[in-house]
Length: 87
Image 1 (cartoon, rainbow, N blue to C red):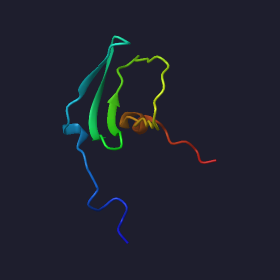
Image 2: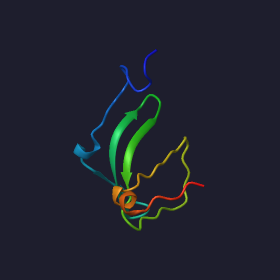
Image 3: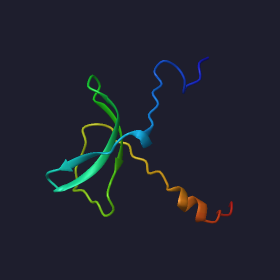
């Protein structure tokens, strides 16, 4: 059985080597920044790393599709935070 993270469909991106693209949002008069990993016009799937500047807020809006977000923790926070006791 093939391992799930290997194979001909695996794509690896070096996000540190990719430039940030400024994405201006006219309705807000603000920009956010993105690194585009995947855009599939056939399915409409888009995968990107988005950086919201400090204090960025958005207006209420919806998406006509599934929408997932994750927030990587900075390493500095993990290093300086004492371990929590196991309950």
